[in-house]
Length: 195
Image 1: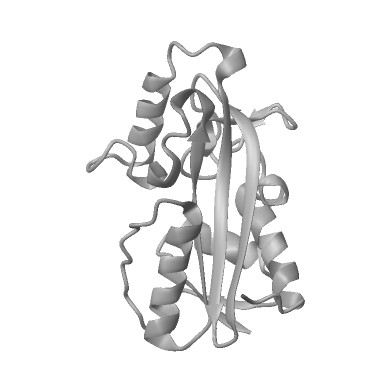
Image 2 (image 1 turned 120 degrees about the vertical axis):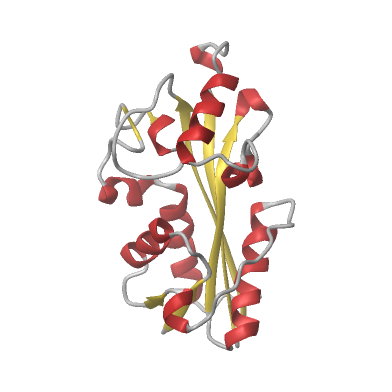
């Protein structure tokens, strides 16, 4: 089955390909579409749906989208759906991580809980399949590790005693929010659990 990944994020595209083996995952560029969908939803699920539907409507080919982010307990779930836009214009991954650490500087260890959340949506001619995955952890005091992207260098996974950026891609795919959501999604697709 050919599926267009409704993302321009090469890291997400790579993870889709690694986890969804048995499917032909192609980029928007390979499909000949260049669509930027404004993320106007208030939930990860709403934003994921907006992206998948826009690509499917434009191409008629099955489209999969994810919307994911970091929810920090001490910051009332912030940055949440605004994770990729945290801090506003001009911030890159390192800038957003720096801002997060600045906002967490007075938060004690026992209150540094956080979770990554991922909502996956597939839209195709048969309907819609959705899945959600979460991965719990804590916010570290400084970035560590070279793997991963986004907030991975400051997301401490107690199971490994390391940040998400210090574990291997294979380990990350087994425990990550995206890995969990894609595993649930794969089962729903196999069982044709469309809405």
